[in-house]
Image (tube, rainbow, N blue to C red; front, side):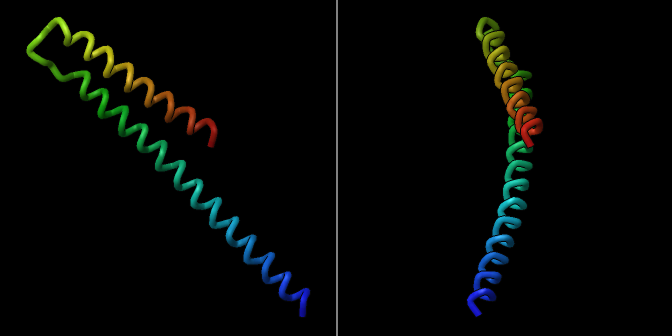
Length: 81
């Protein structure tokens, strides 16, 4: 009887680990997708124009830098997983 109980516990642990692996893969997929979405948002912000041409260049450079950062983060997630 004790052996059956231990077998059931081990089986339940194995199922929990399988579920955890599935959830982790899905979470990483969503993180990659989020970084790609953020990169698109920053890219679109780079194309916005404001009334002050002096600061437009700085704003555009910052937005493009943020977009590049998010793309790099997404690529690192893809490479790691």
